[in-house]
Image 1 (cartoon, one colour):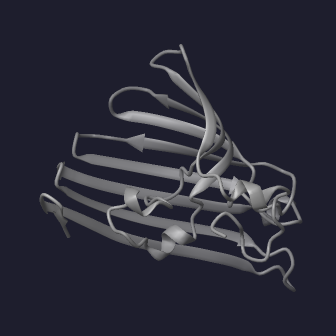
Image 2 (tube, one colour; image 1 turned 30 degrees about the horizontal axis):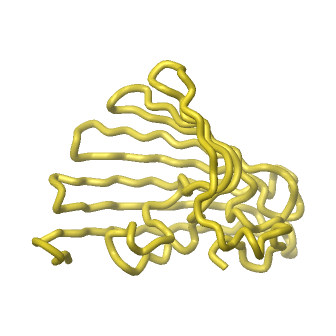
Image 3 (cartoon, helix red, strand yellow; image 1 turned 45 degrees about the horizontal axis):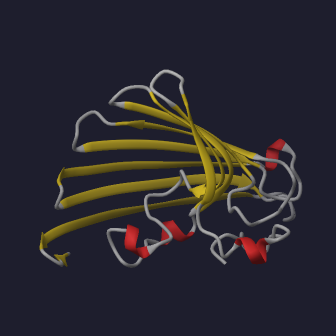
Length: 196
């Protein structure tokens, strides 16, 4: 049930869609350095870790990974401005791609900065309605910050911090909900099949 929000309605056809990982089409438009346009189900811009254990530094994922969307459904545009800066904008169904709290889209953007070959910084923001009441006061605001250091092919250290908030439209008094989490991950490939 990784694609569903807790206690939220499911998207029609979600029983079939939940068996799909990435399923999308993309087009590299001849604009400047190349503008990539993508639509369908694609990897989430939020989060450092993947749903698939083989793509993670650790077999098990951090708790904040399970509270982040692993996949997104919608469309995005990505552009590499130069060797250091890249950006993306996305319009998606909802925070968790198979939930169906309402029929309005959600929005997000990402900026990535690579000052050196060893360092990468990413900031992703999300803003959208994830409840049945789609009034702006109940939209979720969420930010995901990632810093990664790879001094060589054998060592990776990454720090991720997430913070988000929304007002609860169904609870008496509409209290504000708050979420924050962080993880520090490290991996050292010793030799051959050995890593810690």
